[in-house]
Image (cartoon, rainbow, N blue to C red):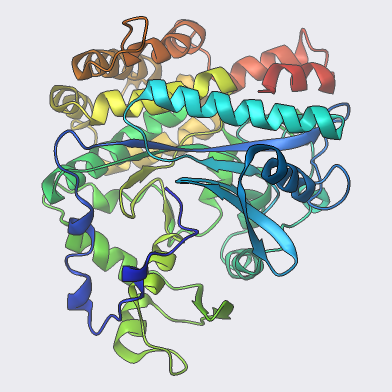
Length: 456
C-alpha cells in the first residue's frame, strides 16, 4: 500500500474543504473484500562489522536495488540519476532516509499469504547478498551499531526537505529518519463507523502492543537503557504529527474529526512537474483556501500530505497501524496476525474494547512513556502490561480462528501467534530485553553473534 504512485483521480482539484468530506468514505470495502497489507523495514549491514551499508559503492544500497531489477524483474523508480525504489505489480520496495530497505507488499487476503510475501522478499535479498559480498539483512527497532552521523542520507529531495523541517521540531528527528525501523500493518474498513471503531481501538491498544514488540535495546554497540529506544526517539520528533494522538479515540469521533486534524497539521512540501516545492507556515486548510505561490490544491497534494502524518495509527486509503518496533523475521507475521485477529473480528473487537475502556487518556499516555524503559514491567492503574498483553493475544487468537483462513495443512492464522506466545509472553521478557540479555551474556558483546541472531 504505497504512496509512491499517484492515480489519475488524485489530480482532481480541491475547490473547498467540502470537496474532501467524502474522501475517506470512498475507500470502504464490502464485507469479504478486506485485505491486509504489510510494511517491513530492514537494515543492511556489513556482515563482519555490523556497520550500516552506504547508499553508493560496490556494497551499496543502490547497487542492491539495481541487482534486484536484473535478477527478479522489478521496475526501477528513479530520481535524477539514482535508483530510489522498485515496483513489481502492487508491491513496492522503497528506501527510508538512512537506507533502511522497506517492503510495501501488495494487500492480500490472509496472514498465510503475508508469510509467503515475506519469504519471497527475504529470499531475494539473501540471493543478491550472496552475489555481491559480505552483506547481511537484520531486523531490529533501531540500528544496533552505527551512529547517526555515520549513516549516509538517501539522495531523495523529499528526505532533504523532511530532514530540515523535522530537525527544527524535534531533537531526535534525524535519529527517527536514519536509525529506526518498524513493522506496520494496513487494514481495510467497511464504513465510517467501522473505521473509527478500529482507529479508536488500535490507538488504545498501541501502548500494550508496543510493549509486546519492544525491540530496540541495543544502540551504537551498547545497551541503550531502553526496552524501546525507537518509541523514545519518536517522542522527540514532531509532536504535531507523531505519536499517540488520543483525542482521536473519542466515542463519537467521525472522519470529519480526523480530517480536521489533518487539515491543521503544517504541510512540508508540494510536487509539481517533478519538482519538490517547500511550503512554509502553511496548513492544508489554508492551502485550500488561498493556494500557494499561485498553485491550487489537488487530491494528489492531499494524499502526499497524508503520508507526512506519523501518528501511531493513521488513515490513508486504509487504516495503517504503526506503533511497533521491527521484529526478528520469524516474529514479523505475528505483528499482522495480532492486529488482524483483534480488528477483523467483531467479537474480538468487543472483548478488546472491554479491556481498554476502563483506562483514561492520561493513563494511556503515562503508560506509553513507561513502555520506553520498562516494557512488560510497566503498569497501568495497577495492572501489569504483561497480563493485558496475554489477554489481548488470547482474544486475537480466537478472532483468527473465527475468521477461518486455512493453509494447506488445515491450520488457521493463529499459528503465527505461537512464537509470540512461546518466546515472548511465556517468558515475560520483551524481544529487546532478550536481545540485551544475550548481548551481555552468551554473545559477549560480539557483533557477529548479534548479527547472526537478528539476520533474516
